[in-house]
Image (cartoon, rainbow, N blue to C red; front, side):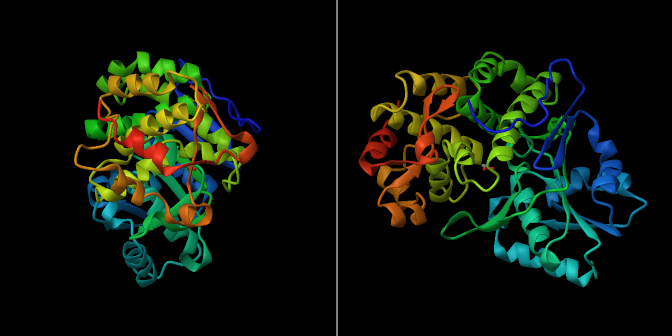
Length: 376
Ligand code: GLY
């Protein structure tokens, strides 16, 4: 179980709307809540102008609808090409210049409309524009609803790795409308569910079992009531972790389970592997390594792999990637500091190991290398 002070506890079962307060801002999860985004924005982040930042795809789908509910406050729409390749200092710079060109002042509120890339990028623009302006997260992907829109991490990637330049900047609110998942491609639904599985592994064995046993329904109806329940339960875990350790000095590291290897896989595949797919593989590899060194209960990795397979997620690295290449892409900062890379590892489903070490556990490369080589 994760520790820390619990935010307002949700019970999504049978409820139309779930609201949580985390580090002072509200997360609202409700089908159809996009229509109320204007009321929420005017309450928590009143502005002279709203600047909606979205990629071309999501902006095309939902930009006008959002602008309509934000009116009569003037809205400007800023767009960038979709994909992780846009999460750079160059795009940050172009968006910042567009705000300056439009004469946006400190009375502007930025609205991040999109998935993880958009939330991180637009959040970083908000964190730095005129030394910081408010922003709202309106996640449109499952991954963003469950994970990346919550907790105030913003930033961009560099050639050295993911999220290496950024800032903590709390959103004024997170507005998650699961109805928007109707237009999300199936592979992104699946990839988002990998993060929900992760939240089950780190803190809630019953959520883990529930996702595994409802895999088919969740995939079949991504905008249905079961998905709303799944999002609410997964978000409650993230909220609890962030509330206890916003700046990642300990407990928040548990959210990195599967991510040390996951980020390396994304990097060596030039981000062709979706984040959730990479994290799915990373969770299995890291759990197997945890079992090998006696940290995790026997059978933990097999259970995780079975749940991920039920969701159609990959569980082993792509054939063409040799372990050495993947290991070479694990975080260089951690390597140079410690001589071994740090991992967040479970001791069993629902509980993470290493509380005494602040949840960062160093593993020798040869241990991880053996598990990266498993292809079954
Ligand atoms: N996605 C991991 C975190 O927010 O800390």
